[in-house]
Image 1 (cartoon, helix red, strand yellow):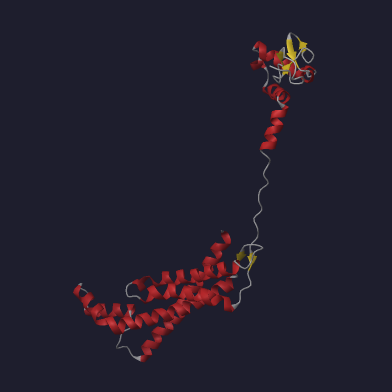
Image 2 (cartoon, helix red, strand yellow; image 1 turned 90 degrees about the vertical axis):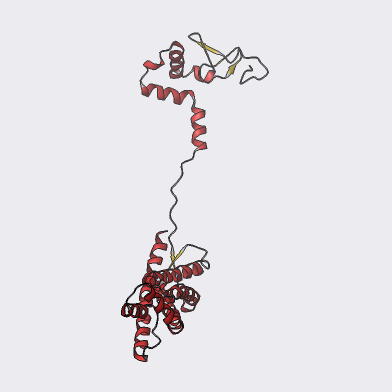
Length: 255
């Protein structure tokens, strides 16, 4: 072993505190123990080393042991502090309120309308039409947020609730139109086949006709009732589309 201070010299021992190799010139003897010049001057470190050698260290109070450890290995503690710097909590970047134009809403509203209207116009799938309305409005709101946030590089964006409701209502109008056309086509083309299917499964004739009237448009229906059904579509679909869009905007703020 070489001396830590004079590498060209052989060590005659090690410091009882820091375990550094010591030559004859660097070794300091205190009470039959060797110390480097630095730790030989530290009375607390010397006592700690003596107690450790004599097996009396356990009798020391906890506070004294902690103080001794701080003296024995100051460089190690400093290295740990450097290796594990304190992390400051990251501040959440506030989301910017997006300024949306009506023109920007067109594409998201069309996509949301297709999501709403297609299953809502298919017989029997349209029993869950409220779910399709909410999903279509939510999709329109989310697509609008993605589209506008891509142009906002400074901070994450969020929609105004009135913009979300508006794009959701537009998607509902489009979805209601699509559903009405699908429903009319299904009634004119497949009314009899669907009626026969229901009757074959044991459903009463009047109940089967009532069910089909809800699912599709009756080909024998008069113009007044046809207009009434369209008005129902024109009110209900935009309403639930707007609700779904606002809910999606609210959820996007919390994520």
